[in-house]
Amino acid sequence: MKINSAVKALSALAQETRLSIFRILVQAGEAGLSAGQIAKALSIPNATLSFHLKELTNAGLITARQESRFIYYAAHFAAMNELLGFLTENCCAGTPCGTVMVCCDEESPTSGRLPLMMETVL
Image (cartoon, rainbow, N blue to C red; front, side, top):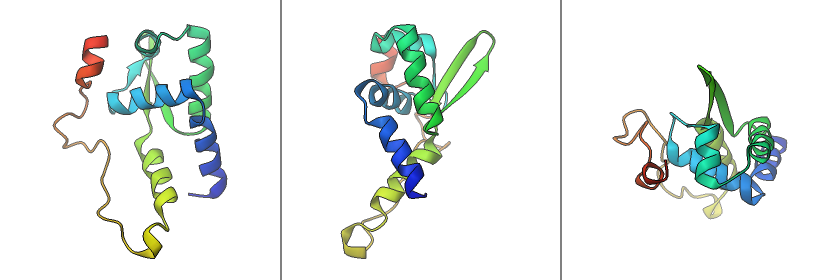
């Protein structure tokens, strides 16, 4: 990851609402959530949500897909992992810090399923 891309991603996350949106999408997994589900879960007005989703999309941190009349947003896990890798690239005085964990791998038992917190909200 280039430093400009890292700055853009970190800038997008450096705002309370956008960070909350990104975290809820990470929890939702690869299936993502519809804009309406995000708005309801976080009590965000639609116009405000639209602005923040655009910023996260432009930073490459989330993706959008249309299904029927709904738009579903999901965390872009490859970009998230790339950002984490960039941030930890030279940690621990150059010695490996441990094994790399893959986020939302397809063999995960919870992949595609909402976490308990989200299931109760939605």
